[in-house]
Structure formats: C-alpha cells, structure tokens
Amino acid sequence: MIYTITFNPSLDYIASCEDFRLGETNRVSKEIIFPGGKGINVSIVLSNFGLDTTALGFLAGFTGEEIKRLIVEKGIRNEMIPISAGFSRINVKLRSKEESELNGMGPVIDDEAIAKLYAKLDQLTSDDILCLAGSIPSSMPSTMYSDIMKHLEGKGIRIVVDATKDLLMNVLKYRPFLIKPNNHEIGELFGVRLTTREEVVPYAKQLQEKGAVNVLVSMAGEGAVLIDENGEVYQSEAPKGTVVNSVGAGDSMVAGFIYGYLKYGNYSEAFRYGLATGSASAFKEELASLEDVEELYKKTWG
Image (cartoon, rainbow, N blue to C red):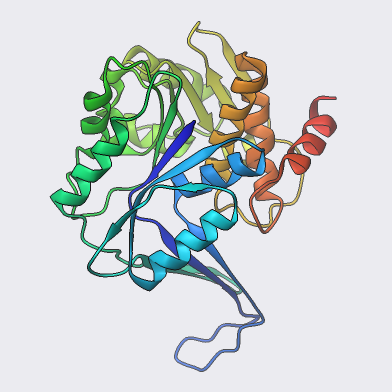
C-alpha cells in the first residue's frame, strides 16, 4: 500500500475572472473545486494509475466532510483523522490577468490527534511506501517530519519526502528513499541560484551525501535531474506542451516516479514516468490520467 500524509488538506476553489478589479463586484466565468494538499494530489494521481493508495492526515468540519467525499469518489482509501473543532481550510485561487491565491488556516491539531496518527503509522510494514508532502500547520511540532521518520526507523518502510528548508534537511539523517526538491528550493538551502540541470547536479549529490537515497529535482520547463542510489545521474528536458495549470505538477512527478519504479523496478523508467506525469498534469486542468502520461511518454521517448 502507498500511504500519503496531508497535514493541512483543503478545498481548492479555483475561479476564473476575465478582468478582476479590486474593490468592485466581479463575475466568475468559470469555477472548479478540488480536494487540495500535496499528499492528496499524490494519492489522486496514483489512484488514476490504478494503484492502491491511502490518504492520512486530519479533517474537520463541513469542508472536511467534502474533502473526504471527494477523495473517496476518486478511489482513495480514507484514513483521515477527524478533528472535532474548526474546519479544514478553503484555498481560493483567482485566475485573471494575474493569478492570486488566498490560503486558509485550517484547524488546530492537538496531541490526541497526533497520537491517533502515530497509531495508524504503526500498522505500516516494509511492504508499504509512505509519502510525506507539504507544510506543517503552526499548531503542530515543526519537527513532525523527522519525528515520524525517527518513529518508523528500522521498519524498512520506503519514505518519500517532498518538503522545503528545515523540514527537508532534518529528515536526511533517516535516509528517506526519495526526496523531491525543486531547483529553487535547493538553491535556497545552499545560498545559490540554480537555473540549469548541470548546475543542480553537484548540490543534489550533496543532499545524497547527507543521507537521501535518491534525489529527484524538478525544474519546471527545464526538466528534471535524478541522482539514484548508485550515484547514476539522469537528466532530461521537460516534454513539450502548453502549461495550463502548474498546481500539482510536482506532486504528480512524485506519483509518476513511484509508479514507474514499482512497475519497472529501475530508476531510468521511474525518472521518465516522473517527468511525463508532472508534465501531463501541467498540460491540463485536472491531474494526469495514465492515458495522458502514456501518450506523452511515447511522444517524448518513443
């Protein structure tokens, strides 16, 4: 089973307005509602690909009920923990001549809820994959990622981490199976500006030396870089296409990598499927289907 954790999931309300004017009444020309959060995005794509996946995290209030309904509708097993107070956040994304976002707060996660999460994690075995993705609510310990990895240390669970700054650096000593920063996030860690794949390679290797088993770096239109556990370097530009929606593209890359690795058992295919999946999601309004990815894969690599 592939488990994902989304600590602060959301309902994402995406509204399009031809000419948004601040301080005036504006009419929306198109609107969509999705369940949001990086872990949930990974689970959606995995489910689209026919893989069994379980969503962990916390839900509260009427918005939590709707998030639960939507993820179950998409074929994801729900093991989200209910929070009695507050409500899961609503994130508003406004598309006009410029794009703007207004992200909600989410409920307070107390110690009792965190203990329930650990109880669920205790059921995982070496046959499972766990994906930790996204930010931590302010009500939770800032060490949550590393606390979880320490708690699960020695169980042989392959753990994927998609996080930034200290959340990422603090887990490296626990040897995550895969980390997926982007080039800007790596640059921020090392105080440099990285724009090409060649520039990324030595810094990705440094993250591997600090403990990461595999390092996958997303670079939007520039493509991606992978340093695998054997020290092999894979580089590729991104598949060609028109970007429609970049939200969830990085999460899709993680899901595609997991799919390719489980299906083919090698990092070359995992890398290509990661790239194809991230791009396929960027080229459409919703997250990629397996048909989208297979078509793009064939166009790019034959």
